[in-house]
Structures are given as C-alpha cells and as structure tokens.
Length: 159
Image 1 (cartoon, one colour):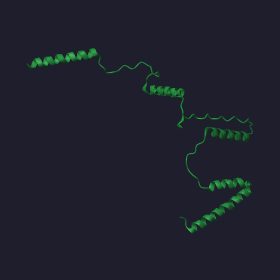
Image 2 (cartoon, one colour):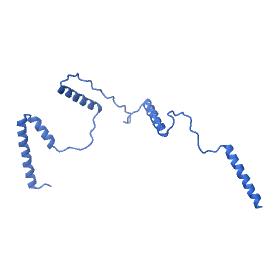
Image 3 (cartoon, helix red, strand yellow):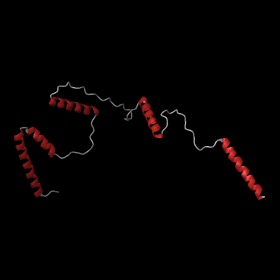
Image 4 (cartoon, one colour):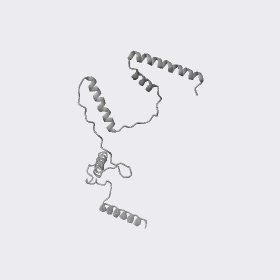
C-alpha cells in the first residue's frame, strides 16, 4: 500500500506529464492525437491474454493497410474485394463437421505419411512383405526327425 508521500509524489508527476503534453500539443499542433497516445500509454492493461481475430477481419485490416500504403506512395489502386471466409460446418452437438470426402482425403494423406516413414508403398493394397525367420512345415519336419533320431541314439547308448 503506497504511503501518503508516495501518493503526493505520484500526483505531482502526473501534473508534470500533463503540462509536458500540453506543451507538446502546442508545438506539434495535434492535441487530440497527442492526448490519445498519452492516455493509451498511461492506462493500465485491462487483461493479458491471447486475442483471436477472424480471417475475414484480418483480411479487411490487411486490405485497408495496403490501401493506406498505396495512398501514401501516390499510387492509385482500386479497392480490392475482401475474401469472405466460408462458414465452418457444425454438427448438431456444436462440434465441427468433416465431410466423408474430406475425411477420406485426410486418411489417404496419413497413409502416405506412414508409408514414407516405414519405407513401404503408398498404396494400402500393396503386397505384404515376406515374413523373416519363419520355418516352413517341411523344414520343421526335418528338424523334428533329426531330434527324434538323436534321442533314439542317446537312449540306445544308455542301455
């Protein structure tokens, strides 16, 4: 909590600022502009947070700024038509709606990304890779026969 002396000092500083602003306005001649800048600089920030702007509003602001630049550079340009953003389709529950066609495109793109990552073909119906390390039934039968012969020889040697 500020003390009484600090408050008095703050008031005197504020008065000095107002006097300097008045002097500046008399020199420059734009008292309204100087006063608005001073008010904006002295006012506390209302709330800090992320502000969002619609694409249409952003496009309108950009078009207006381009027109101002063209005017200041002396070039005359016809006002450009501002593109209007398409409304987002929403479902009954309030969630965004994605059409089946868009969903299929997204799935195809994701399959292509997976294929690039894994080094496989981009088509889902590609020939499956040959399984490594598996035994064929014939190979397994040969191994079993050799083991049985070895066990039989071992049993015969013990007797």
